[in-house]
Length: 343
Image (tube, rainbow, N blue to C red; front, side, top):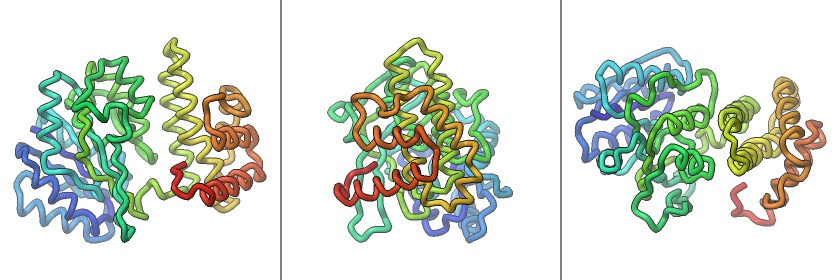
């Protein structure tokens, strides 16, 4: 049995599409766990309606505690069923009909603990829908699948060949022994997936696009509040602290690039979008990031880094209001000159 955990919060517009895609799976032995995390729209009612239609659907209503709390609640309910495998889907996304059948088959065939597929990033808010096929960006695009042992999987994860998200994977359930999602924080995937990869003896990547990730305007990827930005930093820093104990300089270099590109530069690019009082509210966290940057990264980054990243790291050596403003204006100019550049 595969327990599919779906946290639900105010996604009535997208939820039926998500649930229908799970019910349509070619693999039928599913325990579909819908965790209504205190929704204020009709999401909870929609969950109950699907539970009445299909006995594989179980619904649990709880007070709002965030997506980590909902996922942890779902894990508890999956343990009650003694499910052998665990999958996660975000309630505003959807999956291909054969996703879980393919992931389960490749997981069993290769005796792996985690099976990973590729995702298609959907922009459903645009007239001309834009698709980014994650699998086609990876080095394994010409292969059907790639099997990694633990050390290889760690490096592949830090090189973005294995994603940081939780939803494009199928896991053996015993991997979650002692591992939970951090509650009260966003970007909980980033703070959790690396622990699961380390716990797995073997990880297999199936180079097929099976998961549809909807980048609609309400999605967290578009939310640049100071809390989200600093939560992202905490997740990146926890990965750095964990893996920096490895005596591998090239791995540390990857970690620093990860911290620099994924969050340090993002905070300096987007902090100016927030009111001054918000920036002041998170000043201690900003000071922490500045100290980390000064201690670990040269003022202009490393030679192989792109110019825009070097410039942002230079600004991150100072946490002044001027550095935020310059970084924000710089990125606006850069995007005006190269409009399709995703930075």
